[in-house]
Length: 159
Image 1 (cartoon, one colour):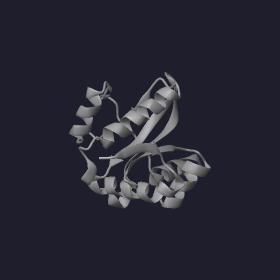
Image 2 (cartoon, rainbow, N blue to C red; image 1 turned 90 degrees about the horizontal axis):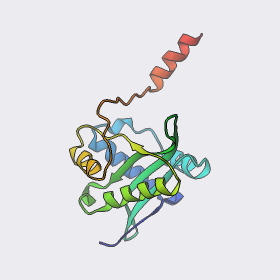
Image 3 (cartoon, one colour; image 1 turned 120 degrees about the vertical axis):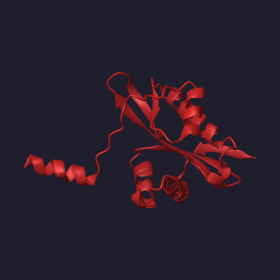
Image 4 (cartoon, one colour; image 1 turned 180 degrees about the vertical axis):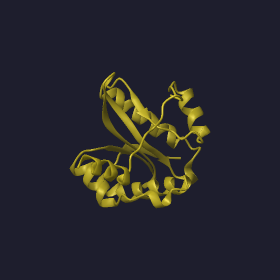
């Protein structure tokens, strides 16, 4: 298989959104995806809020990794891997590992002290893969999200 891992271009965002929706469907959360192509184009290419790498296989986007910088009070600037997605039909081909390697290289090239991400406890294959690469799975930490309803509820308390 001939493939290239490269930085995404604005015109790749339709394929990136397809991958995001494929991941949401895999996780039984199709209704949760609210983002649009225009959001990805604006936030990634006009605002510079993220960097995206794609796996290009013979001109078709078959995988992606979306990252952005965060700041840790313990480590300084870090790279956060928001999502690494490979089309189901392409899993097991090495594309995921190649995208993962590109993310690690990006972190190294940018002098960060940590690359971080969240993985579902049910994704045993990914957990095993990450552990085999030297990643430390923090099993005693919780990921916390506050959605729009919670934000609004908390804002009402301010008044």
